[in-house]
Length: 171
Figure 1 (cartoon, rainbow, N blue to C red):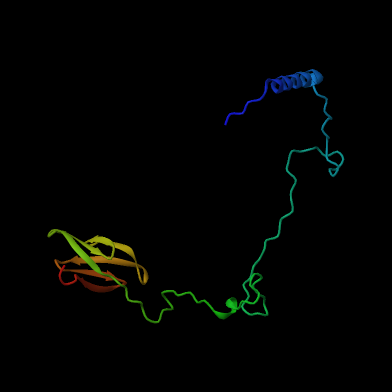
Figure 2 (figure 1 turned 30 degrees about the vertical axis):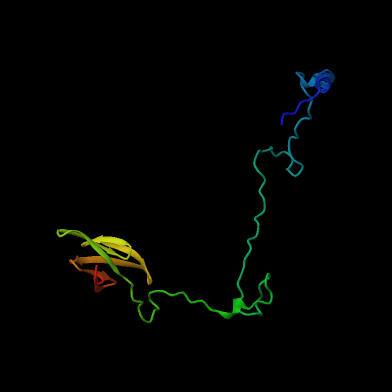
């Protein structure tokens, strides 16, 4: 949509612009008188030189949030009737506090390559003999080393334990 103004409006705007220019000739080229800058702020000591340094602002305090362990220590401000903070204690599971090791779930998906250079597909990773890498499994990150690749099985080592992975029958 194209907007068009009547010629009378365009002439009126031109007249206003000219009148503004004639009324304020000092803005066109003359020097404008401005007050001189203050030599020193009122808080400065007499005789001290003014600097361009930024004034030092006071250090702001940091907020500290503590999750209460009991209802007497506090409550959730958004859900004051909730008891979810007080019901559970989370103990992180590490390798040192496990009573029994979780068995690593490894599956031999396939064997390919030539007889002198075989490749094995374990879970979603391809290995050759002697190759070692970290794999994501049901037990977390596990270091897996491919020891030997046979025509229908693979010998791997995980956490110091050797295992034989066999192909499913029919593959």
